[in-house]
Length: 372
Image (cartoon, rainbow, N blue to C red):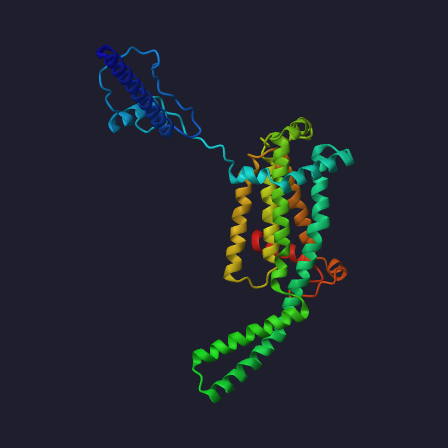
């Protein structure tokens, strides 16, 4: 009986020791997993098998928190104080530029470019120029004419607004004397009623000034989508565009035979900057009296035109060719919108800056400003 009790006690003690060691192993493994979790490989702690370990009657020593922290430092490669080699943190999340380049409008624009090239059978350089000319003529030229119509109507209302403002100022002053208004109250009532009158005039003639900015809200997204679509086709970012990358590599001409590489001669970037600056100067010369804000905007656009030169030298030639052709077409459209015959055809109201000889006036003003 005594031997049987000793045997039962030893078995119980062995079972308890085995369970304590298993719990300790799970604690160490959980500590390493929590310390090293993320996108990196998780290192499991090296623990010997407990099932075949020799029986020991020594009491188990619990693992202290300091020992757990030390083990985490030794095992975790991403811990700041780890003795293991560090690895640079990286994220698989795409940035805003990659997300925009992989958006649905850009992919639709890619399909449009490919369809135009396959339908016309032209080489890629001619297809890019032809697509740019077609889109800007069909979309942006009518919007430019509509913008000129809105500007003409708003300018025609200025005389009527000035007359109504004079009458409103007299009525507010009379009303203010009757009700003993202060100067501040009179000024507030005048501005409030003048805004209401002007809004009613805009509604009457359907010429709210915000409609004049419609061209910008259409042209800018179209420019971005075409640029990113040509970038994706030139770099072969997707499996569907890798075959087209080879076509673009031999689809150039003259000094840019490879449309997937930047223009090393800087011919297109410099021509792009000159075309943009010429458009800005023509727009600035047509203004009779420019305000201080308009001068700031003009100088800002001049700076953007200069920044586009080195930027165009770092992108694929297909993008630089599109930018250059778009700027040239835009310059031609700006000159066309100054033609008196075209303005009469589009029923654009006359403005103070209109002239029967607009091109001669622009040339004279350009020579007087820059060459004398």
